[in-house]
Length: 182
Image (cartoon, rainbow, N blue to C red; front, side):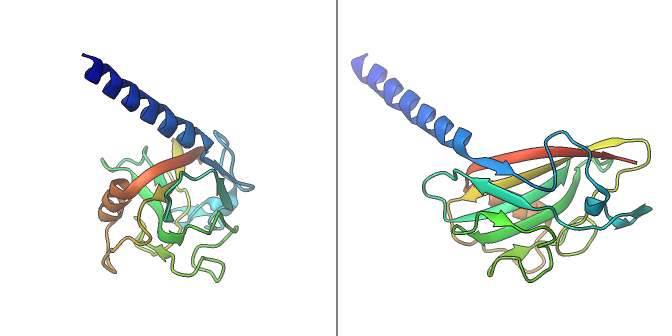
């Protein structure tokens, strides 16, 4: 009985420590805000939309101990596909990096070694919001702290495979959700 109580105490202390670390991991942006409508800069150009298709500025802090790299995802869970819509998947961001500049996707300011996966528009890099007219969609931007320096993905990795590998190696995450309607 004492052994079980001690084990439970250790487990509770570990979980509380993990929760505290997770609460310290924060994602912020000068481009987007929690619950706010995305500006036209972050809207796709195509599919009936006419936006700037720029990736937002993102910064993060308080990553969990043991972080060896980061991944960033942007996902629309409201897309009428049955599986949502992946707008952005970036993997192998070095652990020393704590922000991405406005418009970093596909540009010279993307950190060395970072890999942008082909999004659901069929293009490697960021693809902006473009929901069907009349619908409000959520856009979940997440930074994942990973326990590995590099995800070994094939050149043509699907978003499902990238998501699986990100999930299997995540030790903490921070997110913000913006919205868009047209």
